[in-house]
Amino acid sequence: MRNRIEALKKEKNAVIMAHYYAPAEAQEIADFVGDSFYLAKVAKESDADVIVFCGVNFMGESAKILCPDKKVLMPDLSADCPMAHMVKEGKIDEMRERFSDLAVVCYINSTAELKCQSDVCVTSSNAVKIVRALPNKNIFFIPDRNLGRFVASEVPEKNIILNDGCCPIHADVSAVSVKAEVEKHPDALVLCHPECEPEILEFSDFSGSTAEIIDFAKKSDKKEFIICTEEGVAFKLRNDNPEKNFYFPSPCPVCKDMKLNTLENILKVLENDENQVEVSADTRTGALLPLDRMLELGK
Ligand code: 13P
Ligand code: SF4
View 1 (cartoon, rainbow, N blue to C red):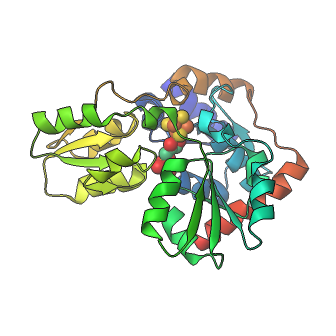
View 2: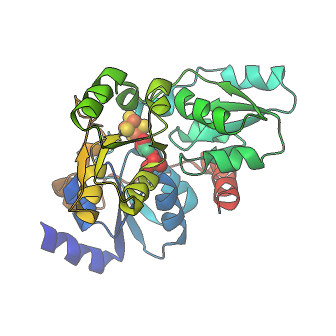
């Protein structure tokens, strides 16, 4: 399968992009592996004709919005992020009516329709920087209440209104299970994704995006880490640091949608140009603005 994928990549001028939560076999064969911000930037800058995006729908959709002339293929179109839909209809309008200077800040983990109603997109690696740079005092942060709360703690000068959405995988990481790991490995540092609940962030030594967690572990002189995010990051962590140990809270956080990016599915879509991501012209125009603003402010 690997040889066939490599040959098809050359033949079609295709690149494979994979998020750190994709299965190891996808990360291994990908040309670019990274967090959501990195992948959006790379998609925009790529001169490939075809992008096979091993992630979930909002990632493929963002790539298509940023590069409408490229074919964007998803190994499985049913790979969706439940949090991407978690804003109640009418909520954004209601907030805009209530606060005249409101900025709607939209985590990139959201549908294109939600992006269309937003002023700027952010990812977990640039949310603090971008919110701080906005001229608006009142911010409606959608859809993730946990990342929103994290941003609010870092940017206290803003009034951040939270929305009641969350990532079910990160929200399931319990303080009890993390504490159990801390007891087993008292020298380990706790590194967590800001999509985790606030009590996890409170006793973490570091919170950041997947790429930031990976970078932190590499630069640290510590040898043991408890990782509070989806288990896909273990592939890069263990490859980069064979001398270090990485533990996950139990049950290990697994995003089943990300795991649909199998080698078999990658080959299938490359062979038949199947599972193309489509975005209507109107949606693209509306969603491009906040995405471009993110790329500009996040530089
Ligand atoms: P990052 O890789 O940007 O930290 O995103 C985490 C995530 O949940 C993606 O689905
Ligand atoms: Fe969505 Fe959570 Fe899966 Fe990321 S880990 S894609 S936020 S469900």
